[in-house]
Amino acid sequence: MTDQAYNFAYLDEQTKRMIRRALLKALAIPGYQVPFASREMPMPYGWGTGGAQVTAACLTPDDRLKVIDQGADDTTNAVSIRRFFQRTAGVETTERTAEATVIQTRHRIPEQPLSEGQILVYQVPIPEPLRFLEPRETETRKMHELEEYGLMHVKLYEDIARHGEIATAYAYPVRVEGRYVMDPSPIPKFDNPKLAGNPAIQLFGAGREARIYAVPPYSDVVSLDFEDHPFVASKADHECDLCGSAGSYLDEVITDDRGTRMFVCSDTDFCASRQAQGHRGRLSPQGATP
Amino acid sequence: MNAILTGGFADPSTQSAHAFRALLEAMARPGRIFTVAGAQPPAPISVAAGVALLTLTDSTTPLHLAGAADCEALRGWIGFHTGAPLVPAEQAQFALGRWDALQPVSRFRIGEPSYPDRSATLIVELDRLEPEGARLTGPGIKTEARLSLPETAGFRANRALFPLGLDCILTCGARLAALPRSTIVEDA
Ligand SMILES: [Zn+2]
Picture 1 (cartoon, helix red, strand yellow):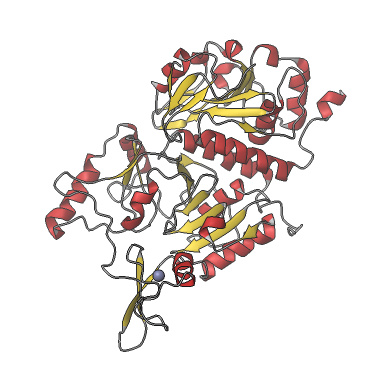
Picture 2 (tube, chains in turn yellow, orange):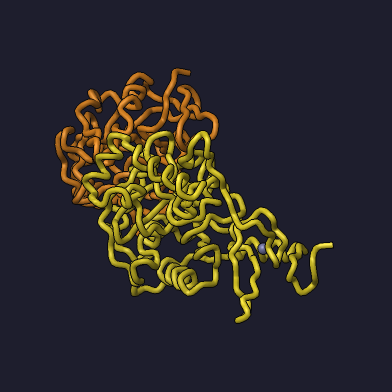
């Protein structure tokens, strides 16, 4: 049951129509940032007001919503956004990636491959991938218009000269369908390959900067790289200490004041599902996988 | 008069949410056909075109009515249910009509090089909408899709403008599909 003090999904109909029009244009021009009239949401900036507006414009009462913050369903941020839409849109919620129809995410793409019928909504702090090269919006627009992406490559190449590799580990820039360079939001570059050829609809919302962009299903999304320094979707070279997964993105957790460390899946649903299936890691109470 | 006052969404929030979801999936997956409901616009306008108008247009979106769509009954219905100002093709953010009535589509805004989103969306009424005929490839399409388009040359010319260009919502009865500017269209 929705709270009758609110309109469906909180936003008024005219605002949702405006966001919906922007979303359709975003899908029609993959990777291009569509300006929209971002509204106040009852949550502070940086807590996903852009993502929440996109989610609000997409939800129907039949949806099952999952919200993750750095892969976890149980952070204050994720819980509050989930409760917000439970109350204002009457949607069911879930922590299971496979059962969700809409997933709002901050800084991760779920480990479990997505499918058609699912929408992944990214919370974006800085939508402009060229912003750190050029602070002026009029200039970055011009650069996108003219496909002037040389400076971006120079910056990445300076990384290689300085560090021997491209140091950018998050928000690693991609080129969508051979046209627009796009900021995939601060996901780890480990997640970048999942942007490409994804059966789900990927939508990006930046509240403070009032931009919406999109990657349609099955799109070509390429992480910028060089022939002699190809892109590598790297992660910590460990297995998860709880589920033993060797292929998932790991968080390093300090477990006591002596600095003891453990590595655990950042995707809590993925890790819990594996443990439920009997997979064990180095620090599992039941011991390692035999 | 009655026809003007009726035929809108009975429950606008929920019905427009469902309708938008179909439009979003359609624009994301060019060529795929979706069924929508909830609008009952006056003749000769299809249910799907009515749904698209109710879901996407309002007093902030200049609308052009072409050919048979430019009739008194529909003008009244739009005025009552959406408030979209009716404008010439050159100023339109949305346009509604049959493909031949919308010609020449070069009249419509295709966006600006720095703002390609500032382009018209055409709601194209068709007699047939079937997953056969012209071959579609591009973003949103896994391998290829087929769609019974009224022609291919016009859509190929539109694709050549990318990232500028027109985006189309194709409607027939209660069904709709979309053809964004990004789709590559080839003859069957
Ligand atoms: Zn794990």
